[in-house]
Length: 227
Ligand SMILES: C[S@@+](CC[C@H](N)C(=O)[O-])C[C@H]1O[C@@H](n2cnc3c(N)ncnc32)[C@H](O)[C@@H]1O
Image 1 (spheres, rainbow, N blue to C red):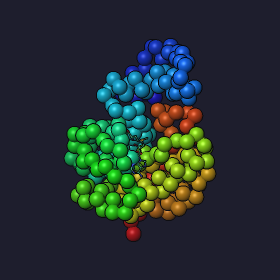
Image 2: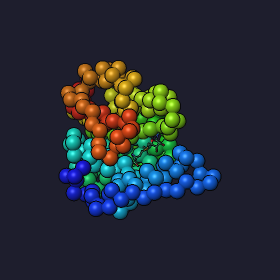
Image 3: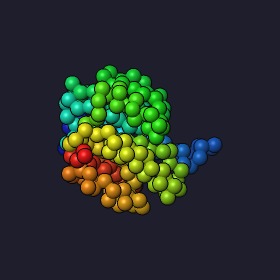
Image 4: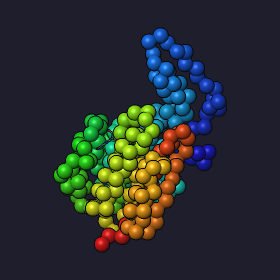
């Protein structure tokens, strides 16, 4: 993170803002507020004009794995509120970007937005049509709202990851890349075994902006071997 010139490492990083617990506020809300107020990625995302701190994750993933290219056709699955798509909009000059989410996304220059559920029949076709052809890069930061129950959260996120991988395997151009959020442990190794023969190179990357306590990690699979 120290190497990232986009990220202002403020002198006040160690000066924590304390949140007094208020009557009527649940302790989980107090913890969330405390984390938000003391998270350097939240404030730097705001000052950089990003809609979410997740934007830093895509920047750091690309620093580590180098998959973004100027003229690619890219789809951003689970894109709301739009941090990743903002990064894509500033970096992809002559390609084509499509962002999709079940939630509404405010317009982003150079990004076609679809409101829909990636798991629904027919949505794949809509995405490919909007892209003007098959994607070169499939990105998925899809996540279900967490329940706090570890196993349930794991299974729900891994299911979304499988949906993203199925979309990628069905649609990616030869040589293409997929980057997808996974949760460590559990079904992660069987999912990996399933896609291993289909890509030239697969690795897992944990960007610095991904909270240490989170099981989240990103699978980066490059060089799709289209049959
Ligand atoms: C962590 S957020 C994405 C943040 C985003 N990358 C950014 O930079 O702002 C995960 C998103 O996945 C979306 N999502 C979950 N399941 C989905 C599905 N089946 N189809 C489309 N979007 C989905 C959620 O609505 C949520 O907005």
